[in-house]
Length: 98
Image (cartoon, rainbow, N blue to C red):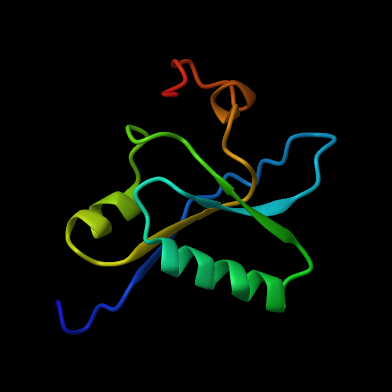
């Protein structure tokens, strides 16, 4: 498998965009490969009308991209909006991890 996997781009989407905000593509900055994230941001610049930005959920957030990074593969994680405050916006009953 090591020879057939180059990178991993994980996307977790809920299709939630907070009312009154402008839709963007967000890339997480936690436990990701910075070079891959910047490359994906440049593809957004080139091919999308949406802007992009970096977001965070903290080191304990956990998602599939973290397993890829732990296994030694460059990984990036995309989301459809800034993640800060999403726990409240989606009505999840759990404390914010940051």
